[in-house]
Length: 168
Image (cartoon, rainbow, N blue to C red; front, side, top):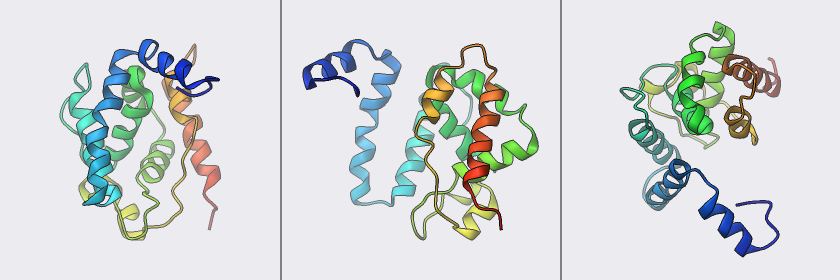
């Protein structure tokens, strides 16, 4: 519960002002943190993303497969309560914007690690190019759609990734 001047105020904000599904997903993540001791970071993250997808309410259907899978699962986590609309409008993106989100969101930033080949674009698993970029305020950006369409916000996110990666 950041931006609170005292630990007690932060704890109170954390317990009383977080939406219950967000608090529950945070608490649910603890069991995954323990796995870092015996599994790679990427494997743990993949299992976590799949669990979040399976347990999302309302149901999002089967865990996705293919080039878009990691991006969709990460967007579900980022958008939280807006996940259904964000994922519906993900399909409305231009091919270029969807491709950049799929590639950049599937990069791990961990040397020699990649997500399962059935969940990400082939060029990510083969190239293992880095670095991986963290768009720090990306979740807040997708959680606060306001009057913007989700496709507009996703296009902006794609442009941030596009401009961050040097062109070769």
